[in-house]
Image (cartoon, one colour):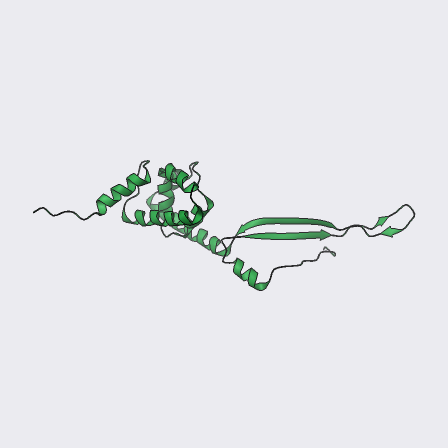
Length: 175
């Protein structure tokens, strides 16, 4: 057991409670360990400076962890309908972290992930957006996918949207 270990916290209770609602938070720890005293040549004993280490890391917040668990449950249900979901989604396309977090929140997140696997140009466009516009775009994609079927081949989002709009448009009556 460490005799010289002292744990100090600099944040308040309110800051800890607010951090649970943040998508990510930084966890920092400072470790100070005492050293053996230094004996000088003339026999005097001097205090040795402490060994101080500052460590920190970024951790997902509680809400994001719950969203990820719920997304995983939806993915397991979705795999029953689409057995090759993992192969289609696990492609080398890159999406921003904000997009991933927003997909976790959406009720049809697996549909969105599958759509993005067929539309790499949408992924590259998402990478260029600021996080707020990106979240709105993911919500728009979610709404669009709620209206139609997921495309089975690689298409652009605009082509998919136009096809969906044609399907949704009211049919004109013949007179």
